[in-house]
Amino acid sequence: MARHVDAAIAAGNLPPHDLPSSRGKAFLRGKVIILSNDDDESMKYSWLNSRLSPVLRPHTLAEAGTIVVARRKQKIVFSVLAPQPGEHFAERSDFYNTYTLTLIDLQRNVVAADRTFDAKASRFMPPHEEDILAAMISWIEHLPRRSYTPPANTRIPESDTSAGRQTAHLSSGQ
Image (tube, rainbow, N blue to C red):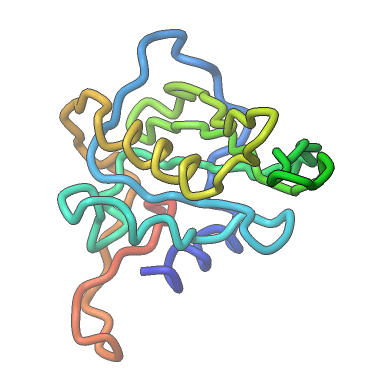
């Protein structure tokens, strides 16, 4: 699936650009594909997809009705560590990521929602990246679902014989 999603991104088909906002409550339509800038500024099929429940993971691009664009930004947090008896307070700096998730409804071509996930650091404890990721996946999985009908211009191609299963590519139905 990653290969097909990355090909659709390279072709300019994903994610849709310059979309209006629906200004409603967040929801999912169909199955979900998460794109993220994990390694650099370019969007790619994200490893976060493996954390979604199997019910939300599409087998083909045509099943995906929602694209989640996860934009990662790195922040620095300065912490003061509590000393052990006989020691002095110690300062520490940690880098951590914040993520802004943008949900794109592919059926209506609108931004369905935006939400930022940020760990709350305390004076004595740096934030945990795993907490942010778990909160993101939980939020996605608990969103209300709406029915999905793939757009007429989405083509489901013949079987991909190299993979031994059917795969989909987004294309304009010309």
